[in-house]
Length: 340
Image 1 (cartoon, rainbow, N blue to C red):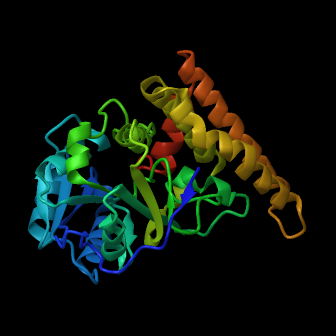
Image 2: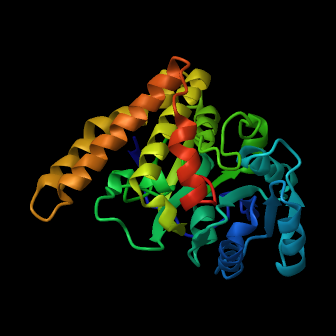
């Protein structure tokens, strides 16, 4: 999945030409339900050791949130999503309006470490680097369930066991913590509006498709994962049950099927094949060892794989399956904020 890279050299944000790269940070939000999270996210950005040159909040078709944010969040440029409703449209709006050389994205329910911007910008010292993403740590509101395997932390939008522990070349980033050269994003056409979350629809992988498209046909290009550029991502109680786990895995499979139609099965599934051949078996071996997660964690690993493969097969052959029954009632009753 990755190629190891040399340590990043000092001098964050200054290219070999001596030009200091400017940074715009885009946060997208669509609901008043996350207002406390949004305030915390903005606060973490305003407390950076190396402040961003610009903070943009893109409000996805929620006028009440736009009015409140504009009146409360000082130092933040609040704009409305000008494109199709959904996360992809909101991100594309942010890219279009951003003025920085680099555009970083932080989820509205995540908080950035104080050196986050500095760590991201340091990766762009190498002109081959098109984007830099970082570690996403889960912040469990009610504690991590004993059965929840760390190999499946991607279910809650976080970095998972099996990812690189040092700076490395990767295929794609996790959307809660990623950045790109703005010129590259614009040239690539941005995020596909037919992918990505829209309200409670849990489909995604728009970041995966974009990263594959950015690097396609450019063997010298690098997308760099820098775990030192960390953020914490809130995981509410509604995302810690078996129903959500199964539904999110199924939706991931559906999403990967859509990505494969756009990029081809080779690029779309290369990391997933390694994950199934190496990461999951290691997790299963750990679960059955003394001190491991035991039968429930082993069952979660098996269920996660089965649900994801079922989603992919149904998406690949045009049978979407019972996604609404899996996601709808549980999401509304236990997780009103939508997908990660």
